Length: 154
Ligand code: ZN
Figure: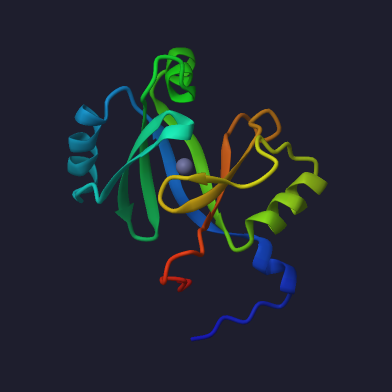
């Protein structure tokens, strides 16, 4: 079935909640916990050096859970946990065109934490929005990187 959207700009819009990021103190204890909770195995672990974070991914339906553990004493996740404790850290929306969506959100008054998309975990280009504008919810935009052979959209 082909989905025909009435407005071309809809292609820039957020497509779905891609994942929910959860800050944890220890992947070693949280991975088995979430495997039990979701009744599904962690399918990928990945360290993002630039963000000083180790991640673990779970998939349920179309949505993923991303567990985040700091790899350094003063990393962003470590600081977050010291301030707020473990818990939901960010909501990530998949976008079809991250540059277009960043432009749109900027023009709507949102504050981007990075002015150009950066490489995140899970083969994604990402951009974060400042939570002071978004009711204290850290929002991530993410777009699949188009370098692999797999360019299929779901
Ligand atoms: Zn994320």
